[in-house]
Amino acid sequence: MKAVYIREFGGPENLEIREVEDPGDPEGNEVLVRVAAAALNRADLLQRKGFYPAPEGYPDRIPGLEFAGTVVACGPSAGRFRESDRVFGITAGGAQAEFVLTREDHLAPVPSNLELVDAAAVPEAFITAHDAVWTQGGLKEGETLLIHAVGSGVGLAALQIAKAKGNRVIGTSRTAEKIEDCKKFGLDVAIDTGEDSGFSAQIGNSVDVILDLVGASYFQENLKSLAPKGRLMLVGLVGGRKAEFDLGTALTKRLTIKGTVLRSRSDEEKASATAAFARDILPLLESGSIVPNVDRVFAAEDVREAHEYLESNESFGKVVLSMGNGQ
Ligand SMILES: NC(=O)c1ccc[n+]([C@@H]2O[C@H](COP(=O)([O-])OP(=O)(O)OC[C@H]3O[C@@H](n4cnc5c(N)ncnc54)[C@H](OP(=O)(O)O)[C@@H]3O)[C@@H](O)[C@H]2O)c1
Image 1 (cartoon, rainbow, N blue to C red):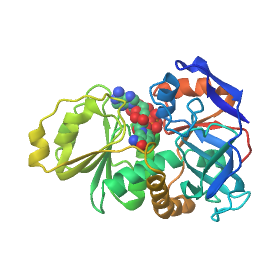
Image 2 (tube, helix red, strand yellow):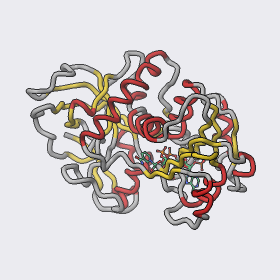
Image 3 (spheres, rainbow, N blue to C red):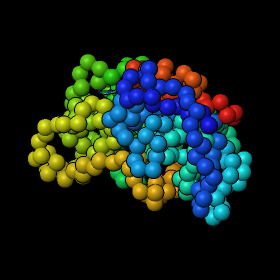
């Protein structure tokens, strides 16, 4: 089969489309999926540079953490899907290929109102957002959510879910145009952190949960912005890994600071996050209350340009690779 391949770790010029070995026939509860489209993630950029090796059992040179496609074959004990069913899901690598082999409990059915190329933009962003803010962060009715890098793939997913559930949402971005565009999704308070990252003065102790996709550079301001018993969910570190902060703030406000990652979780934990997504998010997609956030679609052959585009920080929502296997 054809797949996106990292020839050598380094810049985007090392990416190519290469003929690689097929994943093989499904065994046990596995399902073989013909991939129609697979979205990009920051993790792909790191993997390409050699900084984020794939977990054991997943290809080190073929990136791809999420996909949408059609079922080609099911293992003997896989009973949830049938041949030709449209499915999407997360995996720990290898999704930017013609075929991907995965467990049936890591898949969800694609709602009939979505094209596969749009559906490919959903799993990683919406599962990450839903898992971090609701399953782990416990955002409740009437509470306020602060989302950093709100125009990102994960940020827009969280914004849409929160507005569908009726929460008040504050969002930051360094790009004025992105926060303007987020207002169309119902963003209540938009903060431009382009010139000045001191957002806490505009928020003042009022936030119950923070979905932090930025990390170190916002850490101190995050602690100041949280209400008593607030929860800080650390999900992305594009703004650095090391921070100095006043532990006293965490103590007096009785804050929870929690880090989370999807890729390295056990199969069971991924199945559980996928099941929660299917239960809570699929109905919202089916009804059209939330939509996939596709910024641009590139042909798989143009994967180098796709990486450059994601790396430029210009994207609003997701960057998708079409694998040329139809809708
Ligand atoms: N833990 C997990 O399981 C998990 C899963 C998925 C993603 N992630 C992480 O979550 C983060 C968001 O992912 P994504 O796919 O949604 O990202 P994305 O769509 O690529 O968007 C990232 C955005 O972050 C902003 N940004 C970049 N560098 C920044 C900096 N130094 N300071 C402040 N903002 C900065 C940029 O927007 P503006 O500058 O225009 O605002 C950029 O467009 C990434 O760090 C990713 O690795 C984690």
